[in-house]
Amino acid sequence: MAFLPYVGMALKNLFSKPATESFPAGEREYTDRYRGHIENDIEKCILCGNCQRNCPSGAIKVSKADFTWEIHPFSCVQCSKCVEVCPVKCLSMVNSFTGIPSRSPARRRQRS
Amino acid sequence: MAVNNNAKKISVVPFGPQHPVLPEPIHLDLVLKDEKVVYALPSIGFVHRGLEKLVEKRDYEQFVLIAERTCGICSFGHGMGYVEAIEKIMNLDIPPRAKFLRTMWAELARMHNHLMWLGLQADAFGFESLFMECWRLREKVLDMLELTTGGRVIFSVNKVGGLRKDVTPEMLEQILHTIDDLEKECRVVTDTFLGDPDVLSRMKGVGVLTPGRAEELGCCGPFLRASGVKRDCRMLGYEAYGELKFEPIVSYDGDCYARCVVRIEELYQSMDLVRQCIAKMPGGDIDVKVKGNPNGEYMVRIEQPRGEALYYVKANGTRFLTRYRNRTPTYANIPGLIETIKGAELADVAMMILTIDPCISCTER
Image 1 (spheres, each protein chain N blue to C red):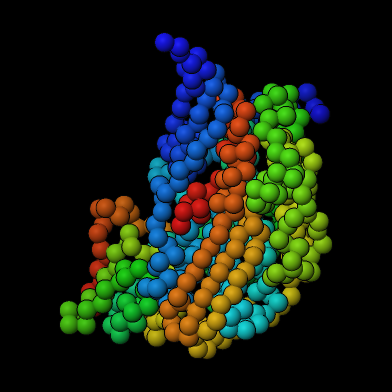
Image 2: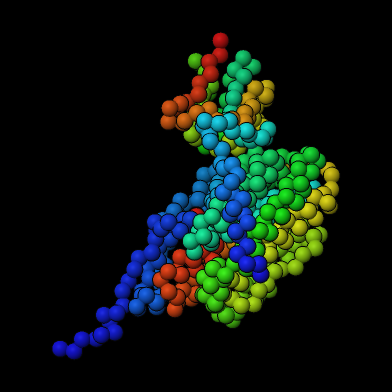
């Protein structure tokens, strides 16, 4: 049983830099596998709707008539199921956040 | 008219659901007599989301995602328990590499849970800098989990038939390295918990639960093991636990200090188990092909960081299951909590609620 064992650590913490990162002022480094958001390479997309059918939370909406693919970022649970079932592999999980969900309601990609 | 003076001294103080020290909402009506608790009446139901009913709306493969999101901290255990039950019903034999990886992630989850608990316990008796220190160390474990699975608390790596993601040898190297650094830093923190005179005066001799009473009330997990009962579901040998060498950690005093000791020792034991898993990790596939639908019922018991959790699954041959029941450890520990609180001072109640490691989101899915 040491005498006041925490004192050494407390003094060290007093003079070292903070352990928190000043996000969003500073950069947040994500690892490669981080599940951030889904991106669609729209030129490769064949609008088959497989991702819409397999999404467990119903976040993706595909419209073959309008050539659009859109995702609601707040509904997405980042499970990567759409990435797995896509037949042409145009969907990918990108390791960063897109922004505040209330200001970006649905991310829409239009095919030319 | 004669007045009963004893009746005047009783007061009922509501504790929760919003309280700075509680991680999740639980309500207790504390019946006090001159600042000593005579009885506590719990009420739960503030975060009931009806997750067990959702099993009828999402097919059995998608339900892993929902089972995982029952709780943020015990999430890996919930996903693993559900998936194990389905695999046993369908008689799927998952490859050994998947078993070892699941064990490794389960032990990493145990580490981050115990570090979080240590921080909350320090916060409950007012030692805020120790709380911040424990959580800073917990961030290192969360970084390891982010590196391998992609998420800090919700991993989404379990699926029926195995795992969705594999781990590279470089990641395993990095995990070993981080655990070595983490162990040295954790020693300072745990020495404070075990040796600091202020901490000892708050925790020693407070909230004693005898072993006979703990077993009678149906307690489980570190709460039970701190009263001297040697019961740990990991000894059943599910996943890769049968091939790892470890003994359940038991302490005999039954007070808050003993529960702290058990969790601290389990933290170091988990670090050792992760090292053993990585050393024995076999190569090979991580999943098997799943054909058809499950038909039958099965119950799985696993050792979550907070105690013993049961997973009962009933399937009838279609894509949707008929019943999923999850009995979580906190649900079993609440009667033990009520027993411990009797006779305590009002100021100690917050700390005693935290010694059962309450996870109310799990309790009321």
